[in-house]
Image (cartoon, rainbow, N blue to C red; front, side, top):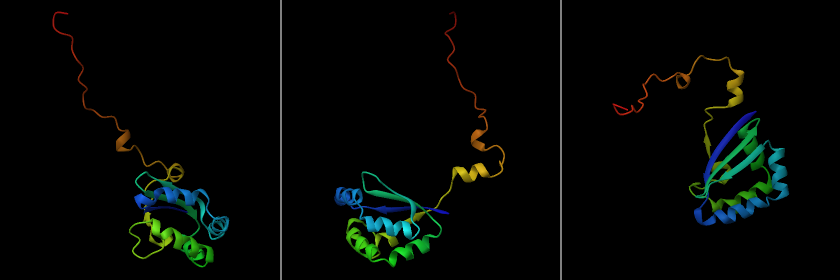
Length: 136
């Protein structure tokens, strides 16, 4: 299963509308996402409109193609497109920036230990401690 994280930017003046629309996503849209391979799908929105999405899918390209073939997705993307910046003519589900995964705990736990990491090596810098004044 492929884990995918992506980024989009919601227009700051449309954040409330974006939240409202996602509080009640059309049931047929939810079914289409699930049926085309968008699993464990979540969206996270920062106050300034930075949107981070996460999903798990057998194949992102196939999941996107599956949604592109649905009528409900065409309607949803047309309505949602105006809420985003910098899509350069693409629908939101085509114009997102996929982020590179650089760490996954379960993968690390399954891998043989590579040895001590530089972070876990003790630091040998002496720590200065205050000395009591002479004569005390």
